[in-house]
Image 1 (cartoon, rainbow, N blue to C red):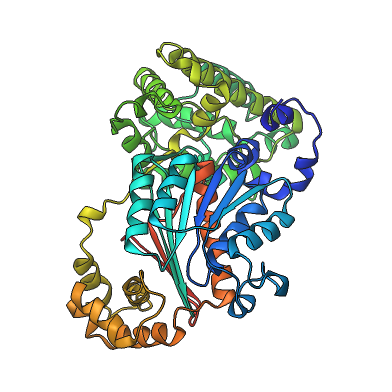
Image 2: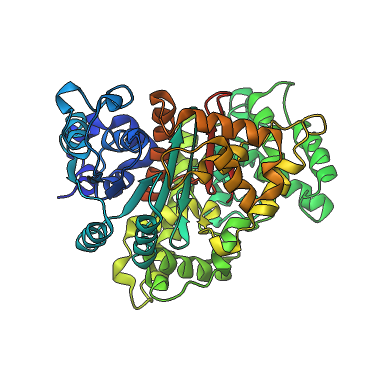
Length: 518
């Protein structure tokens, strides 16, 4: 019995205690995805930032990791890498780091390979199956080309990492469109009370609570849940005006209409109803993210993935009902406990009915057997916030236009935004294939690619700082960067939360982070 099934069956397991906090973040199915993942790190340079990234993946329980690194441990390594000690001197860095990383979480499998050349790298990549690849800079162009070709061929996510001195950046390269079902929006945003198109059971129960509203006792009147109040007053408003209050001015008038029904000023359930009017009384509509999902045309065999089979069923459901499946959640509100529980059950039952209908539509697909009921339930619950993350297309990257936007017009006196961190990326990018370079050499490379940028004072200053570091890493900068990278890796593996788009730059001098699409 796997972890997910054991938890669903209510079987107490040690992992629930060990991973308690992270299970609250990405739940059992997210944890299972993490435990099935195999990470490859191609480690070069000072070798700290990559190992710090792995540390933050080993602790939450990634399935397996492998380090490819041909360096041997020297004295300089001991000052920046906490996974090395004096006993490591002269040994292969990959072997020592794997051994010490596994001490953090013995359940995680670790492996290493201490040869890094063209022939060995090609052979090793072809002989293994990885779900995620990380590599650090500097990395020889021929080795980088092998890595990039491999991840493109086998559709593996890739993160490129560079940390030098007080600066760092990492860039995410997705192989295909990444669908995120559980984006974890705020609870209030996910609430769908269906006040303008209630179903029969909700209408009947709400009507039973308000049919004698003018003669109810003060206690009963003050404990009518605001859902029932709003349904009652919406019905009364429509009898008078012929339509629902959808425009801003109409909603303001509707607030006064509802307030007039209170027995006394400050009646809590009426205040809740008035506060909910602007957020909950709105015509059903599709968010831009779910519209994009509906309009996307996946290519085979992508179209047979569980996600797209469910999307097709949800589209049919929407065509039939003009609404998405009901999430089924109900916010807290002033009410008697028995009434609130009954209201909750009405919403939950409707949600279950919608899931059952979508599941029935899924069964009509030729590949329906790959779709689980839990997948359908998760999608229905989060349908309004499902999002597609598109891979960046390097062939369309116009770095000169980005420099123009970020730097040339980056006048602090005219701009309330802090200065761009793009110079850090440009300087580190210039030494992607060498361990160190002079500021003159760095500026020459920048000028070759982006002539206008090289002339800027801020770019010259950053280039001098990068040159001063001589390719060395600072542990605190690399540790922080590794934490950020691990967070993005987990988002992509679990397909939860929204990953950055697509490059993150860190300035350790000013303690600032900037995300730029590059």
